[in-house]
Structures are given as structure tokens and as C-alpha cells.
Image 1 (cartoon, rainbow, N blue to C red):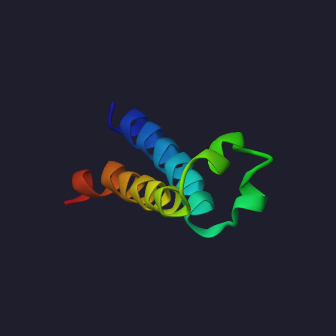
Image 2 (tube, rainbow, N blue to C red):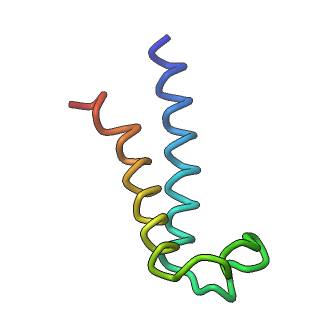
Length: 66
């Protein structure tokens, strides 16, 4: 059960971190082909969402380690 948890948590954290990093670091022009909705939200909301996703990825992995 422990191996299944870490496998699933690791994969989810990887996906959250990847998506969050894209939203936090890339320009709207580079995000538009993948996410058509980026033009409808302010840039600060887009960056904030990216940061929250990266923090969520850390939250999946760090608590069980402590």
C-alpha cells in the first residue's frame, strides 16, 4: 500500500508541478496553444494559479515525509 501511495502521489505531484511551472513562468503567447482560456484571466491570476499548483505539488509529497 505504501508503494502505491508514493507512486500515485509522485505522479500527481509531477503533473501539478509541471502545469504550475508553465503557468508561472511562460508568457501568454506560449500558453495560448495549450490553454485557450489564458486570455480571459488577468496575468496576476494566471501567475498566482501557477504558484498555487506548485505549492499543491509540494503539499502532496512533503507532509508524509515529516
